[in-house]
Image (cartoon, rainbow, N blue to C red; front, side):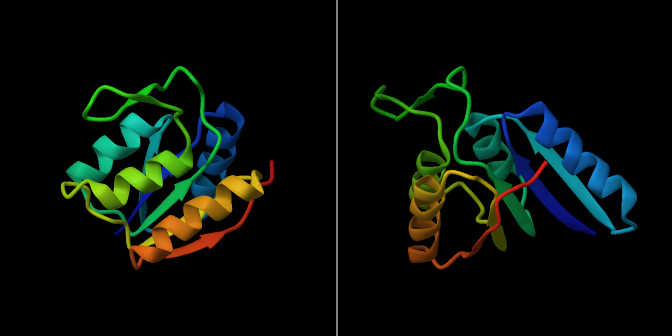
Length: 125
């Protein structure tokens, strides 16, 4: 069974992705998360074959560096934390589904330098 991590803060995107998964007969287990904190926690607990990440995330999902510095909760920050934290298990592949082109390119550049296979395909509703 393939494991997928889906990160987005938009309820419509969650619903659309759930509908897509329900219509297919793929043998997948999808973990749905709404913010960077939950995505990092999930990657610390288990290995995912595919991670689907948005870039622009809700400001309610505040992130703090170990030194207490508050950071903007977005996909670029997530990508940086993924390569810095040794306790995170990298997904086999990452799909960046953000329409924010500069943000998506930033995530891709960071993850590619870490050797992660990463693709960009904006998520259409």
